[in-house]
Length: 334
Image (cartoon, rainbow, N blue to C red):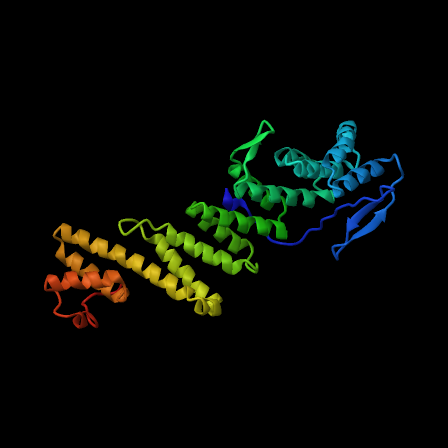
């Protein structure tokens, strides 16, 4: 499912409205200030929507819905070009009334019926905002009254929809990194590693690139279940860590990231090799055990597992001192 998301970033524009006595509509300019847009003729469709937008700006969502509900009912089967904005405004009113789940129906109407409208990108952003609230733990209302039903699965689905619906947008980039972080936070580590990888593929120049690479490293390390299990994720983490050092050398040195993660990976891999050597000993396969111990000492000499291996080898008389295990161990290539 995740691999089907091929999304790359660009921008979008949002608009809003504010009230005046004549129901003149205002929009939000590039400086974040409300400026006059037009003065719709009283009684026209434009005037009705401007009145609703003004009511929202005054924090009067019920009044806005009082205007929008009958207007949408009268025009929903027509090709009126203002329908997209009407659905968007009513969705905003429902969110203000804490009925965000019902608002999704109006935002979906905009997205599915009016993909070429100016309201389309705004509706997608509104859905992403609702998705984030659900991922953060806000529950969905049951019977429109009590928040008792988890909506995290819906939040995940909405984040994926954002990426599918706005390819080439900064919004889809934001949704992708948020979803990857959510998977990691909830310990769905395989999904997290995959989503971080998809993000890095789709957004190689993103400002979140370093964050995604680190997230993928941590997710791979966390998937290692212990010395008795497969260590392929540790190998992947080591390769990714080497890449992090190459791409972000200052960050790797400044915070000790490379040293700390490298030591953690080495210790985990060394513990697995130690467990493998002990398994050979339990099967009375001393040549294989000795080979594995020597490999462990050569590859991970500074780990706790290496010290344990050294003690076992000394107890069995395979070496006389730790110094003799350096240099030629008689082992071939890896």
